[in-house]
Image 1: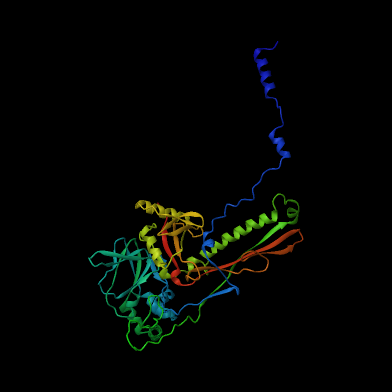
Image 2 (image 1 turned 45 degrees about the vertical axis):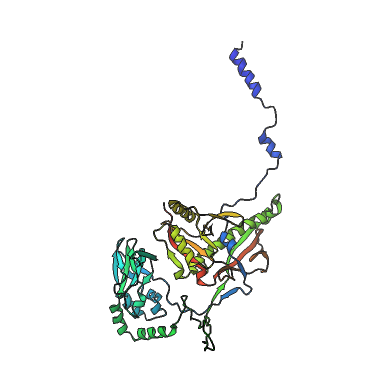
Length: 470
């Protein structure tokens, strides 16, 4: 005889019995709705979008400029053994007076006479008005350059850091006095070369004396602030005044940019291409993702390549440092001042853009947004700030911010490519069939050709040592 509990259990089993086709079985007869293959590494690639692309028919792009006489405007490098820091002798040729000098023994003698000085924050390295009788090489640390204002207040003129130097003109010219003060912002090390030590080496080296005499003869007495020979002009005269004669000289060996290449071989099995092409073409999807990866690499190379990358092609005088570490509004103003002739864009790592926002918020500033190609992007002084994750971030959390003027007519930064190449799939990118091997695998050579050129030095400026930490 069944109990009430057993009767209730039987009723529940009857109610739970399947009454229709289950979804798991029904899916066997249905066609799923699919997305194309997704790729996480695809970015906005703003650099490729903002660069005006110039057709390079011959594969090489030559940048002709006026002859410039700004010598030795690079940076000096050092080596260290424990706490001892030494300048690399050959690096002394970065000094204007020693550019092109090749006597290794004399350079070693000069390097050996450099004296090391370690400093802490707040120390005065050189003082305005004191005798300027030494060369100062900054091995490590940041120094604030300032001058005394009209009303005895300190006016900051910039920040010097690793590899910079001051006082090089005091070694060969008039000693005079310092026209600025260097105060340390961080701890660090400088190397100093006294003028009397330089004179001692100069007295024993005929080759150095002849080199300095030849260097002075090459550099014209009248130059523009950009180092070019001044073009003689007359204005404001009355009557039949004698007009000056002049000419414009060009560089004898202008720089030439060859197109770089990024390539890969795409392999697809013939069985996959024959049988699994619906609803999406397997070859087209493989090719699409491969091209996306090539374009990402192209942007990376345009930023970081040692030959054509923007980080390596900015002039040293166009590189500035942050005043305190984080990217403050003052630093952004200084950056735009290096590209003051109609700057087009600012490129920064997304983390750097976040740091810029934090620094502005600290001061109660809220950068305006501008419409750029249909996107609302942050801007500084009306110049759009665009993200570029190809700008590297060091393990210590520092990066760089780029400002540039673009366009050939504006004498700015331009991209270089060549259209109309054989088997072109998209501008300056070709997909070439390479055949089928004995294992029935098809191969396609995918090639992208590109480069970038800085037409004049002040078209590109870099804010270096930007700290991202909170």
